[in-house]
Image (cartoon, rainbow, N blue to C red; front, side, top):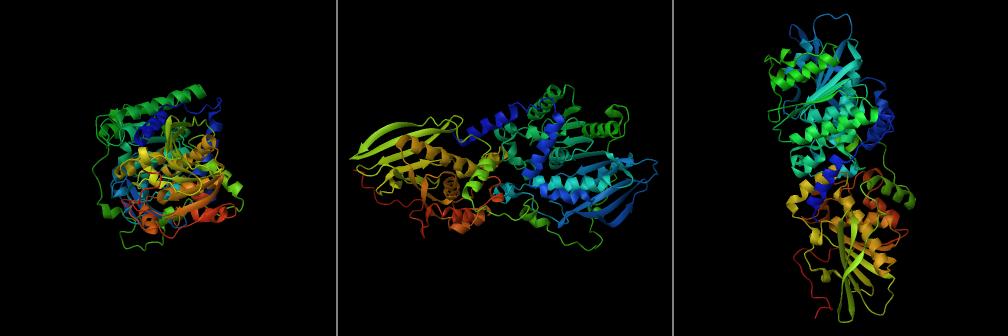
Length: 622
């Protein structure tokens, strides 16, 4: 098996597996799952900030006759500044009006690019707050960590721009719902592209959202992996997922609120069948669990990744029915947007020389979802249990190994065995075992093959007075893939809740168990270099049979981008090892310090090998 085929199979399972059985208590399941998501996404510690609505600063107001536009900013959290435009109808209303939060896609001009939608809402009786994303042109932050910054450490941090954008939307809801002119029970959300995806996340986390229209933001994992639509998506489409839950399970938190899915048939980033299948799956699930239909509809139309007049009219009619309380109307009778756009700079919050507030938008990934400072517990058993529970939700460490020796041969008096075992599902990995005669067979050295080590396996044996094992985890040896596949595979693995570093750590733990079962080794030395160091250290914390660690090119931290990690270990090959949420609990240096009480840790000053450098033949060759 290869990693691409494996992830494609996992993605297909995510898109087709049964959604949770709630015992007919859908609401209680949603409450519990929502709390889990807030915790997993790193937002639980932020919730106290919602006790008060954020205050806003208006830097200018534009009078457009039938509506006004306030140019304003507010802080979603201290230092996270959101720029926005508030569109208000000019005519008097006897009762509070419905509201709409418009979540921008990734167009460079953000709120000014989508202004026609906000203007339409204001001209038809809504108060509309349109907010910029972290990619806004006025106070830009970083939105594309895994996508273009090689910041795979975001996975280990438990950070995704999906959480940041959802939090900004939650605070926008707090602001809008606290305006005297807005009916807080009649607020809808909508957006296109990235804004369409965030519409799902915001509605999932904020149960008071009354209606949703999501455009070009809905789909399943199989399409993302098999059809490579993942490759066109930035990070906000894919929240942190350490429990390996399907995307549809998060979508399910929106039920039974009225939800309209707009899906262009020629969308480059969402395959048409995936959109339809996702909606049908959700509708069937809710009907089966709650015994009643969910007002969930999909409108698919001939277009690329864009709105059309027909799709916009559908969206406007949806809100008119579910927020204004108007009878269902033929969408063809609804007004489309007009072309009365203002020049982009006129809608900038700071266009008139207004003082820009101090902000930390460009460092959001460093602090927004991290919570209180991490403290590694002094009890290794406690820490190991936390890691086991939070970082390996994708598979079962105790599942049967089906370990076997597949070949047995001699080189002189030295016995060699090739072996393999099931790491998870049907994927068999393995290694080579060498046994010297006449010594204690309870002790052994396990060397973890590095992907960039190009030596034949026999060269990796230590030639020490111990049994010797070379273990090839996924992505090394026979299962190695071309480096050009890294980006797609690593992002896909993270989306599915099985980051590459976590899978390799899982493989090491399973391999150590196989070595014990097949060869009786109970006193193990574990050797690792480069990208295998972190998996080796974590596996040692979880497996007490490892008594010695020999490590080379140890990362300073898992909280480094790939370029920083490569610079830290002094080569151009090593990618960072991402393990979801690990940095919530510990880091490699902290874990090494804690392990020293139980394990001898040896850190050579230099590596004994670089790719292309072959040592002399080992003595057992003839």
